[in-house]
Image (cartoon, rainbow, N blue to C red; front, side, top):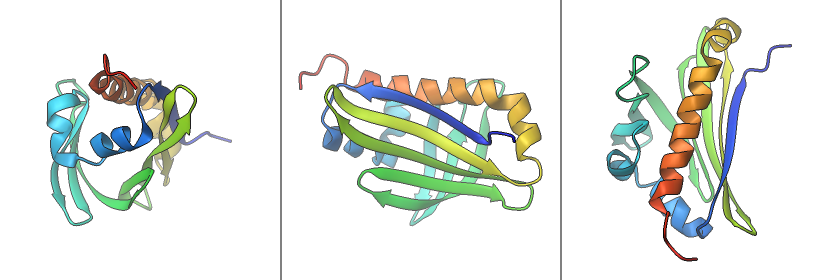
Length: 141
């Protein structure tokens, strides 16, 4: 069976509430995140630019489905052909905050698209994680 999830993790040496504040400050993404930014947030409707500055750069519409501590989740696409459910989950750990950055894909094209793009998506997720980590570099707990 095809694994239709892309998942990365990283520990950020900062308190969970500090990481959460940065994660849900959608207007602030352009200042710290070279991988993605929210170009519009209107209630639960969003417009996102992903893979900024790369050959894979794309804009897409989405919907926020959870903005509750400590899970940020969004979704978008065509449920029949290619649909993504993305989530950023935070949990406290001895070293700070564990960030889980994951997306599950469904639809008739999901397996084929992931077979071609999994490595690119993992690199994008890792880039997001490292950019968030860099926000807290040099801060003491």
